[in-house]
Image 1 (spheres, one colour):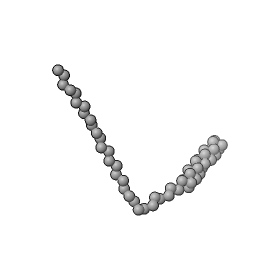
Image 2 (image 1 turned 135 degrees about the horizontal axis):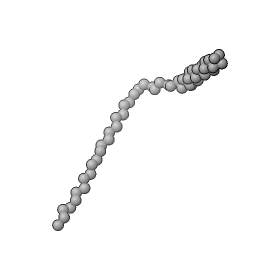
Image 3 (image 1 turned 30 degrees about the vertical axis):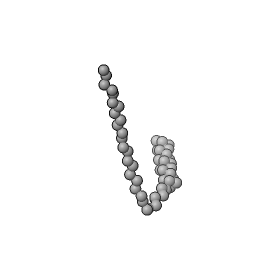
Image 4 (image 1 turned 135 degrees about the vertical axis):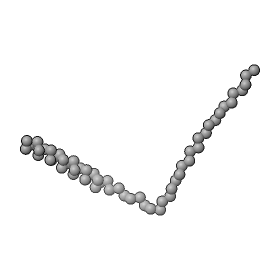
Length: 55
């Protein structure tokens, strides 16, 4: 006679921690960041072009 098989149920408990804040989130200055990045890339490009023309 065979023994009945037991089914083992493993449960994982996931808990989330939420924090409440009364401070407003700081605005991210994305347009200014993109302007600085674009200006830097343009400056590097101009410098490389001037060096190639002078050599």
